[in-house]
Length: 483
Image 1: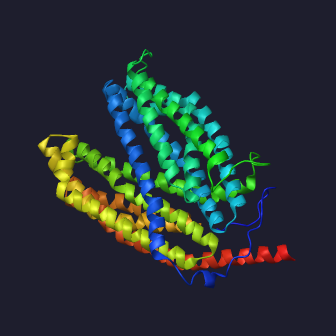
Image 2: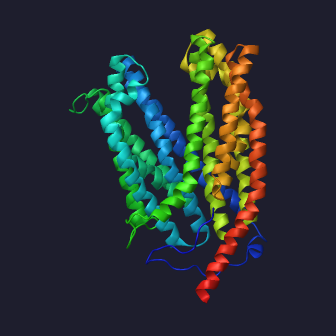
Image 3: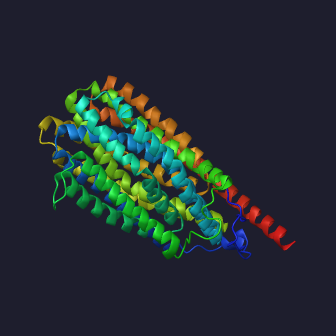
């Protein structure tokens, strides 16, 4: 799917005629491409590290209240993760469209899409907020926890539901800025919000600095305060400060169904892909349960390690989506391919390096979470198998990001979704042959090569076609305008 050059905005101007696709594809400054890829990827990796660090710190703060609080908050967060995945449909779609508009030198189009994504984010999050406020307790009751843990989860989810609109603004604000080529601003805002979250949560959970001790509710309120501040910063930058996107002006805040359809057409498959992958990893738990309690605890440790290893892949994927989208908007198929190749090499180096460290230091990494010798042995073997999959996952992250950049969000959803669940089936069979935790993770060594191969074949076939189609649309629009 490619972008039209005409949008209903009084501030719009038609970009001057650009050189032909062939002329623009003649020269590519590869050192500059490397700098652009790293300039976008590194702040995105830093932003994900900050999110993870905040989650760990929040867990430590809540754990100080007791096991019941920890269990209840964990259940509420599982619900919120699904909500965040749903809201990502707007953020992904808007990021792709903004990137393509920036590449086409159509700032008015980019700003229009960004503004519409923000207003639609608020509009769609309000019903979710209402449902959360009314049905928080019945939703968390599905987990079948003890009554005290259910009460904690319901309280946390109710407060968090009130902040879903500002969460949507933060997700969309960060995505549209990355689409415009700015990943540093989202990282800085995330850092500031995280600091505020920690301070506010520490004060409100335990009643420091003369404030009342609210317990688990204090953690939820601390997060809400931080998200309000973060959303306000994103709005201030997009309304007044950003040199790349300037949201506002006549007609900006009127809901437009056409733009919403474009954004959701691209974003909904990406959101569904995330939900499918999350549920596929969750489906491994019943398989691991049959291996015993120690193996289940070691599995949780392996998942924590996996979340760390994904960060470089996510960062390079986001950078690839933005830069490929800009190349498509500019009609440069060679640049789109070159960006993908550069990002692929660096992602493999980063994640391969992490994999090597996992193999060497797996017992020490698992030992951070537990000093039980049996758990350390089981967990270390699983982590070492996870390490072998790192280069494969690096490729799937980057190629999936490249496909999203050209507007194809369905192919990654289908291929990664199918093979993600295929890994669950393979894991189920492998534990019968080798009843050990490492056998569960071995499944991803089998599914990795066909996943990256299928994504690569589709990418190579589609990139040239999409750029040619985009160039044809621009020529047609220019011809009609001149006539």
